[in-house]
Every structure is written in structure tokens, then in C-alpha cells.
Length: 130
Image (cartoon, rainbow, N blue to C red; front, side, top):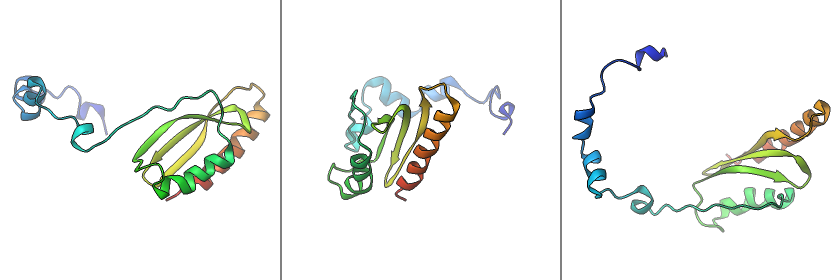
């Protein structure tokens, strides 16, 4: 799509938008956030310790699907595996699909980075829970 088709068209009318019911509710403080309306909550997990690959695998393949940790709709973030200390991984989970993939490496030796990323990517392919 060409950006000119959607940007600078002159179709947005601020005055009209300000009259929209949702805008008025928000301005008046009457809007109920989705977190309250649908009972959605969030938490942040932080740790300097890397994940144990076997226990992470067990959590992703059994724990998430079993409901042992509640109904987790979406989770994402960065992670490290104890067996790949120089690789930062990207964690992305939505519903029953979890994906772990390399995001960055802390090693300038291209052979080491390539080998580590390849092993990590193979693990990511196996973790798709679809």
C-alpha cells in the first residue's frame, strides 16, 4: 500500500472525533478499562538467573496448556538459557502457541554466534505448540 493513500488525505476531522462516544467517556472519566471490563491482569517477571532449558520446555509444553498457572493469554519478553549464556532469546506466546528464538548474541566470533543461533532456532521450531 502506498503511504500517500492513507496519510495526508485530509479525511481526519478532530472536531468530529471529539464527539465520538468513546472519546467523551474517556474525557469524563467514565470509561471502563479493558483490564477491569474483561478481568485482564498483568505481571512482570524479572530475574538475573537464566532459564534451565528442560524446565522451560516443561513449562511451555505442559504447564501453559494445563492451566496450572491460570489462563495466560499473552506473554512476551527476553530470556537467557543456562546452556546458551551468550545468546539473548525472544519469548513470544499467544494462546497455545509459544515461540522462542534468538534475538542477539554477546560474542563477536561469527562461527560461535551462528552455531549458537542455529541450535537455539531448532529449539524454537520444536516449541511451537499450535
